[in-house]
Amino acid sequence: MSTASTVPAPRENTARRRRTLYRGDPGMWSWVLHRITGATIFFFLFVHVLDTALVRVSPQAYNEVVETYKTPIIGLMEIGLVAALLYHALNGVRIILVDFWWKGPRYQRQMLWAVAGVWLLVMVPSLVIIGMHMAERFL
Image (tube, rainbow, N blue to C red; front, side):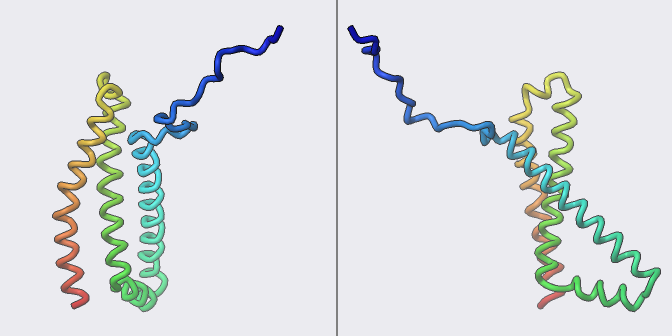
């Protein structure tokens, strides 16, 4: 008499992906992007304080450093900085609402999409304005 079961081994559902600890949920992407934008803003502030401090050391050196900022690459970095600041600020308000509003956790996903919509609504005019200034500077 065999002790082997006649029931076939359960097969994994091919429609379901194999999941890990990271779920890929929009809320987790929001968390990752919030950390990245925060670090980016911190780096910008650090560089900004350092280059502004050059005025006290040597106004000539300060003028040379500021002159290097007038390049198309730095213009693109300015656009990235505006995008990071807007997202970080808007998502920060969402995080505050999730933490302190009693209905916040229930509506966190809808608030995330609202943040994305408001970010787009504010970012498009910002791109136009920055683009006009870049065109004046480089053309």
